[in-house]
Length: 266
Image (cartoon, rainbow, N blue to C red; front, side):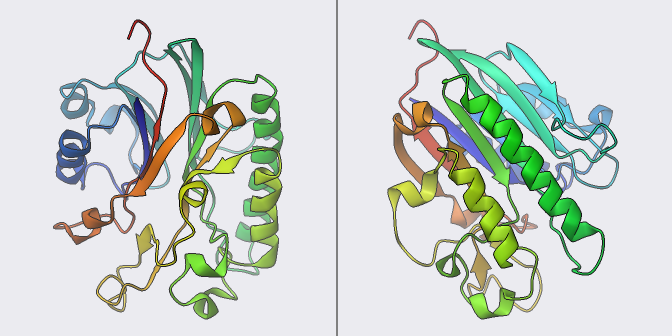
C-alpha cells in the first residue's frame, strides 16, 4: 500500500514543526507540498531527510514554491509546467518513482489563485489550466499510474463550500474556472475524494479571517486527480482536518489517498 498526500503548507520554514509532526504521525510515502515560500537552498531539507524522505524542490523567494518528498528514490524529475518558457512562477514539479510492476508518476501543483478579477491574474489562471490540461493529456498517453496532486484553487461544486453564495464572484468558483477543471477531469482523470464519498461538509481550507475555522466556513480546493491506472488501485481517500486546529497552522490541511501499489520487491 502506498500513501500519497498533498498539503499547501503556507511557508515550510514557519510550519516545519507542524510538517514533521504530521509526517511522523501520518507516515505518508509521498508528499506533494505547495507554497513552500523559500528558495531551494533555504528549504529545511535536513529535518525532512532525517525522517527518511528524499526531497526535490522548485522554490521561489517569498512566494509560491512546490516540493516532493518521497520514501522511494526519484528516477526522474521535471521542474516547471511545459507550455510557456516565459513563466517563471514556481508552481509545478513532477517526478517518477519505481513501484512493483512499473512506474508511478506524481506531480505537485500550485494552480494560480486568479484574484482579483479584472487583472491579468485571472487570464493567467485560465491559461495555466489549459497548459495543465494539455500536459496531463500527454502524461495520460503513457498509460501508467499518475497522480496530479495539489492546491488547485478550484471549488468544483457548490457542496464543496460551506457558503457557496459567498464565492460566486471569486476566481475559485467562477463558471469558467469550474469548466476548465471539468475539462481536466474529462481527459479521464478521477478526483480521489469524490470517488470515495458524496458527503457534504468536506473542506481542505479555512481562511484565517472572520473565524472561518471556528465557524467551519471552509472550502475544498486541494485535490488528487488519478489516471485510470491509479484510480483502479484507489483504496481510500481522506482529509486530515485536525491539522487546522494545531498551533500556528497552515490555512490548508493535508488530503491523501491510499493506493494498492507496492514498492519494488515488496
